[in-house]
Length: 502
Image 1 (cartoon, rainbow, N blue to C red):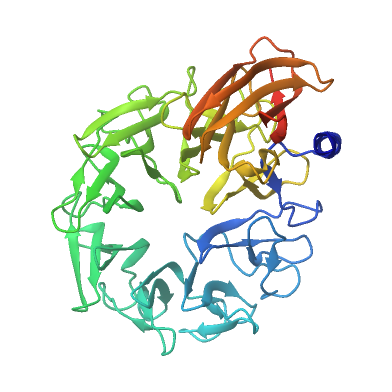
Image 2: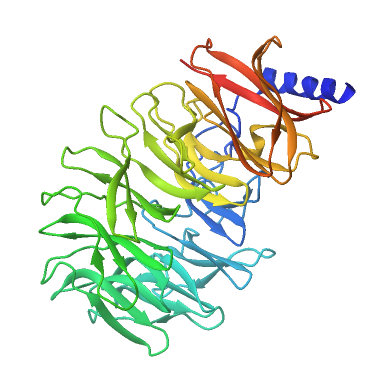
């Protein structure tokens, strides 16, 4: 009894004071002063690295571990000036215990810096010496070397390699002289560095650099001749390189490259010459339950969730979350054995959704309540945390957030299970999905804030493994409710808040 009273006391405080929806955390980098606008979120060595502005300093490099307080690595460009601009793709990497990132100290331009965790960051290389920026970007670590793109007045934009000790070396000059050759994205795949290069003969196409032979060559002229296919959205999924590319005949579609054969076009969803896919900065695809999921536009012009099955090449419409218009799904990642993404359902704006592989995708939280969008961006899963930037419409602008399924309620440490409770807020049915480590007799109930049960399944036997309970909440009035999972002795294992919406 004492334990249950303690749980209720703690939870009553939680209900009274919590402003954030269940499972979410606002890191409030700028302490409510302004929008911190986190950029370039990157999972490196189990830590989230990103850039943000804290209201007193400009956009500077940060890191955060778990749900701890974000730490500014250094005020590289002192005062309110920004250390980095907003036109990068992937300006950071972690190699041999050191963090490499792009920054401008106000005198060298935007160059590569290194931070060892103890001393102040220092410039690695300033190829043009002085205020002109080489704009290092598209960082990729492969076999103990850091590959990246950089721009100089003598050679334009080219591919470089850095071993962590010696001066970085330029390894391409496909268009000799000051004309740029190499653009992002860049990725390591099949023991080679894959990138996009532009030539007068072929336009912007898919190229590779072989570190073993130091040879650079074109992989495929996807849109043959001088026209460019502009490959983008590189992701390695299930040992294959997926990307999008454009041709005059098909528009932008999904392609796959296996490292040996010519890249294959996998889709033609919008059967006109208009594009099915769009260029996005990251997380364009995800591999989940043996399928590749992505957002694509059909012949009606509406964008929804599609899937590609590598086993039979079947392409199909997977989910139409907005039944009345363009859902424009994006930011696909796998977290906690579910597919997470951002989508506009037509009622809540762009918010965070999840799909468990069986049931209809469900909203995880309406951070900006109502039809306005919180627009979660840069979804980055690390351990139990799913980090992203978003605007929860509290007048402080865009900030760093995370979602953690374990934060949804107060947990008894004796409860050996993984529990997902979704959607929350809920409109129709609440799903309680438990992965039990052992057989258990459990009671699941839901009560209103006055303690009146609105659902009580009684004490039931649950086998080890996955168990799913659906609780109807469609006819309940909007407001806050509390769920409880307890054992046969009445000890509360897990409790938390549910928000019911119209």
